[in-house]
Amino acid sequence: MLLTIKPQDIVVLAKLIARKEDKDWSQNSIAIELCLSPSQVNSSLKRLVFADLMPPYQNPDKSEPIIQACTEFFTHAIKYIFPAKLERN
Image 1 (cartoon, rainbow, N blue to C red):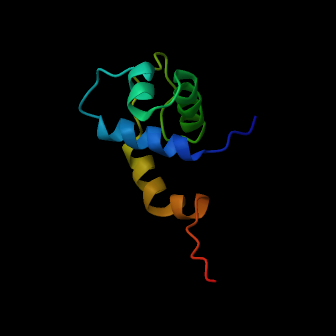
Image 2 (image 1 turned 60 degrees about the horizontal axis):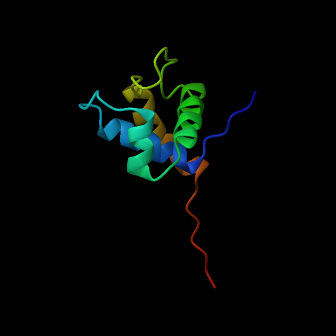
């Protein structure tokens, strides 16, 4: 099974990192705050676990991002996954 990181996954991940002090979150609350459906948030969490940016979870509403992996991802990998291209006319 191949899962590919989507842009919405990065937004979900950033939201979870920003809320790291607030342990009282749910997939529904994240979905509402980000204007996503709960199923989109759930799929994002599955892809983030597959990418080793979040640990496998027993309770999907209480999982936390792996900060060291996220730091490495945001520092080194994101520019290759979503390259910014300057178009010249």
